[in-house]
Length: 567
Image (tube, rainbow, N blue to C red; front, top):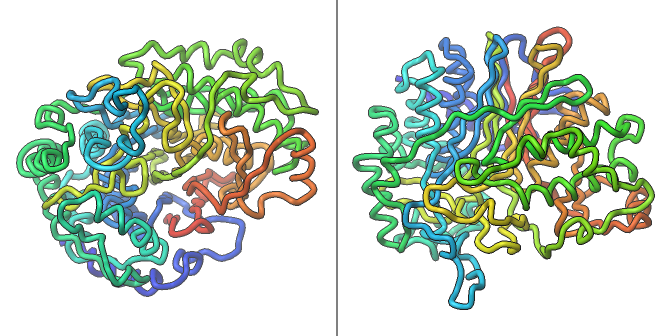
C-alpha cells in the first residue's frame, strides 16, 4: 500500500505553522534546488506525491497525473476532477505538444441561455448553481496524457489521491479561511449540506476526511476514464444536474474528448516561447506582449518603474482588446492566430504607444467594464530526471466552481460557462469582454486566459512557468519572464516580485500593495493613469534551469501554501 498515511503525518506539524514557515522557505531569494528533478505546486502534499512518483521511476507526465489528482483532494477550491485545463509539455529531445482538456458547453446549451426576456444578462446565472457547469475534462485529459506518455501503471498514479481522501489531511490556515468565506454559497447551492459547511468555522490544523471522494477516485483508479464518464459516477453527476436544473447529460459525459493541439510559439530576446494555443487566449496574448516588449529596453527601464509599468500597460491595452475581439474555440471559429502573432501586425498594433502619455482604452476599442472580480485557478510545473517538462494549469473557474458538490461523489463542479460571452460586450466575472468568437454553442470550449508556458534557450530547456489568476494570468506570466530575462532575477525573486496588471478595461492599473513607491505612483498619475491597489493575485509556480544544469523551483510561498521541492 502507498504509505500516504506516513506522508500526511510527517507533514502535519509543518502544515500547522504559518505559510512561510510551513513551506520551509526562508527570506532567501533563491528557491528550492534540485540536481535531477523539480516539482512546484499549490500544496505541499501534492508536490510530495509527485516527487514520490518520480522516485518510483515515473516520468514528468506520470507525476503530472498524480499531482493533478492529489490537488483534487487537498486543494479542492481549484484542483479538480470536476473542471478542466491545459497542458504544455516538452520532451527531453525537444518535441513539444499541447493538451486541451478544457470543459465544453453541454449539448443542451444555447446562445442566449443566460439572458432574460429583455435580452439582458441574468446576474450570477452563469456563475452560480447547476446551470453554470460545463462538461468536465480533467479526468479525460489525464487519462489521455497517460495513454500517450505515461510509463507507470495508471492505478499507481491515482492511489495516492485515493489515500489522501480516505485517510485525511490537515487544513492550512489559507484553506480554512477559503472554506469559511464560502459557507453561505455552499448552503445555497446544494440541496443537502455538503462537508464543506462547518457551523463552528474551519480552523488551521483541522483534519478533513473525504470518503465519498475516495470512492470516486477508486472508480477512476480501477476503470480509467470510464470510472468517471460512465457508470456510478456519471449517474451521480446526471442526478445532480436533474436536482438543480443543470444541463450535463449522460451523452455529454460519454462523448467528451480532450484534444491535442499544436502549441503556439514565438521568440523573445533569443529565447523560444512555447505556450498554449486557442481556445486559451494565453499563449497568443503572451507572445503578442513579448513582441511588443522586445521593441523596448525593459532592463534599462528597471523593475516596476513608471516607464516600465507605463509600457506594460500600453502593450496590455492593445493585446486584451484583441483578445476580446478575435479569440475563441478554433473548432467553431476561425481564430486569426497567424495574424495576431505576425511581427508586422504587432509592430503596427503597438506603433501608437507614446512614452509621455497614456492611450485612452476607449480609443483602442469601445467597451465598458467596471469590475475585476475573481482571480482563481491553480498551476504546477514539473521537470524530471531526464529533462522532460510539464506546465499545467487547471481550474474550476471561481474558487469551488459553481459551489455545487456532486451528491455521493464528493467533488465540486466548475462554473466555466461564465467564460463564454453570455452577451457581446458584457464582462464575465474577471471583467473580460468577449464577442461572437466566444459565443455559447453546444459542445464548444469556452475561451480561457490560462497560460502554461515553457521557454528554451539555445534549443535546451530554460524555464517552466504559469499561474492562476483569471484575467491576471497573462500579465503575471509575462512579468515572470521579464523578471528573469530583462531584470536578471533568480526564479524565486521573479515569483516574489510585486505584480501589476492592466487588461484594457477597466481602464486602471492594478498594483499589488507595496509594489510602488509614492514617487512612481505620482509619475504614473502624471501620465494619465489611474492606480488601484490590491492585496495580491496569482500564485506562480515556476522552474528555472540554472547555468550548472540544476533546477531552481520557485513556489509562490509569499502568497501562501505553494511548495517547491526537488532531488
